[in-house]
Image (cartoon, rainbow over all chains, first blue to last red; front, top):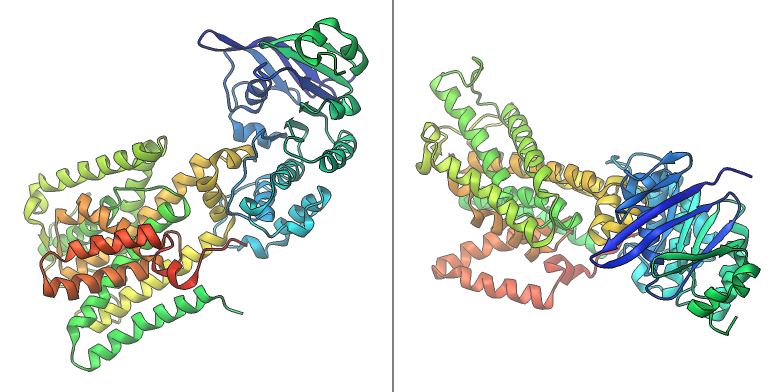
Length: 249
Length: 324
């Protein structure tokens, strides 16, 4: 079996008495979509935050692309190829969609300490950014400020940013949230193709999308992993049904 | 086609150049001095606008850099006048070009040291810590008798610039105007560059910038240092205009004035500092002639701008700022 791109082991994080992450281990293999599901408050976003570097775990290790990244900051992890989208879209609101993505392109190209060349006339920035926006279907809206775009469109910008970063793994935190059924369907198809480029750790509440996409599913409850397996194994797991799925699945 | 803001900027730049020339040849040198003050305060505020307008770093301590630039001019001129060596046997100088370089280096170094610490904080804490550093330097200047202490330091003859008689008001104005022009061109280049993109994005959303792999702290630190350099060179010009440096250049009122200039003119706008400084100096002149309490009316205007015209004068005339 191929070496995992991302491997976390025995991760722990407590907030006071709350065990938000309680000895979580999971990995992400090349070419797969690994879904992370669980009820609200199960610690999914907390886990993503620790992988991306916004939160520091109390214990445990995170290996990415063959190296321990536990001691690195957010910016350094992103430069190494961890492409993250946020549960609540996090963009530069005054900048156009294009300029938001150009920021990622500029980061990939190296230094931001260039003071004289105007970015809007720099085709090595605008062209890759435009290409990424077109891939997510936002080419026509590229020049509007992020603050004037719809909720769903802002999520698409986030994915375009992760694409432009040339990420080696994607951490997608509820990419379908706030999208209509049509948008979810298109995004599901898009993510299905994206896994060939880089594996995806997908946090998602839309179970149709999860069961359609995921090669493996990990279920979190109260910060602990209660089950890991293929979609079919998870669907019939009694503990998962009790904790999360109920009878809907 | 040029945007409305570009046309407005060109108009302001021409007015600030042409009016003093007319004043000079109609025997009104006082207005030339007034215009010189506008140009110098504009340059100081262009520096602050880099940190505050583009980077969202509300520094309440930029008087520190303004004063350091002023003292660089005063101290070098004093040593040139007395003939005493400065340090390591180096003499003072009367050459503005050298004074400016020293002012820029000193202002940049101070901004680096202050920025290294203050930029670890944000919001109200950043405002207060920048203020605290500026006050430290203020009290140091007051209690340092070698260079005049509380009484300040006179510059007996205005320093020299090659090929220009700086004693003539119009000539000195043109020197300051040229430096302001350089400052504005650099600001515009920085604003549109990769560095400017990262800096402005960090103001809007720090997490986003870090998440694409750009460290906001380093970007801000470099912006703060460049900002301090601009304001310091303006301080050196200001000292030469008044032929006098005193701790008041380092005071918190001075820091506040620079912020007020930017808010009046338009935060983050290229010509915001110029519009703000012109309004400020002209109000000070006209209203100050009518009543000693002219700052009461300045306060009213500031209130009006904050409540009804967030983009300042530039925003009022040219509309909202646009980013590509």
